[in-house]
Image 1 (tube, rainbow, N blue to C red):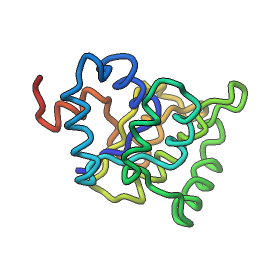
Image 2 (image 1 turned 120 degrees about the vertical axis):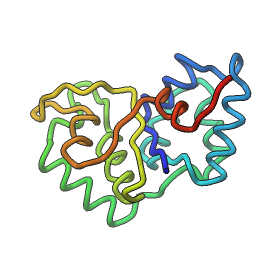
Image 3 (image 1 turned 30 degrees about the horizontal axis):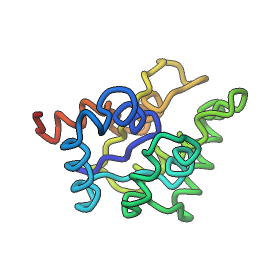
Length: 155
């Protein structure tokens, strides 16, 4: 299984629920998963996290193998997603810019990939969140905690 992690899920883990000063062993295990190729994120997520000043971007920068570069296949899928779901990106708030890239990256990584996000489904495709689009496209969407449970970790 590969986990393609969204900005919100990284922030859930790093800043909200499992900060590295309290859960250092968790972040050591996550680093091992990055090296093993189990954790991935879109290049756009990496860029979004660069805007935060909380140390998470530095953690990812030290583990650049986590980043999946944008290629033609991902770009093509992003265009398809935005054509089908133009409100997937919230242009009014200048947020969610990476969302279509997360989904496209997960699809590029293959059928054994789950999208990890902190977003909750809206159940509406006119203003969808990542889980809504994942559901339509037959991608699994889970939370950061769900990912930890699937990995079988206990602390």
